[in-house]
Length: 229
Image 1 (cartoon, rainbow, N blue to C red):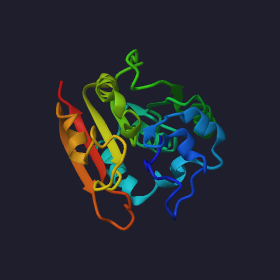
Image 2 (image 1 turned 90 degrees about the vertical axis):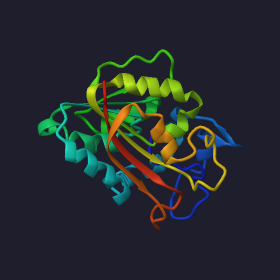
Image 3 (image 1 turned 120 degrees about the vertical axis):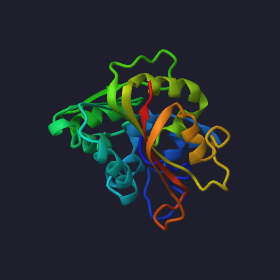
């Protein structure tokens, strides 16, 4: 779904659709109308095409490259597919099976046009009726949790169902400044709290980026772990 920013459109240095808050967060509530956001956005929501190549995203890619190649990869909440395209390069011989899904049909239709060779489809990881199509060697969940926190336990159960035994789970998650008020803080108050939801996984690498001039909101978590069972 892209880099997280609950205050998008109110900060300098980034350009978001002016109607961002009509579709995502409004008046202290999660709206989550991603399909209309992708339909009406004048630009690329969350600057997905740019942020997937920034240094703080590359930290996660370095973790993933260290364990590559992967025969099968799934990205959950892929948005327009820019990060999924990077994952394709670390699949086995660059031709391994890479799949990705998002809740927005409009995002998926655009992703298919932008990135041929990746199987994109529509699904919702926070839905109680979710069933994984396969289990994967690597499952990637990048900047998704602020949009599923109201159904956190369901989302975690569904994410876990996608990872094959001894497979890898990568979480990349941006946080607002932790001293500020933000939606979902009572569920995911910090990177450490988010990691605890996946305590059944054995960590390989963890990086929490803090207080850097280019990480302006708050911490950024990178977490790569092995499914123990």
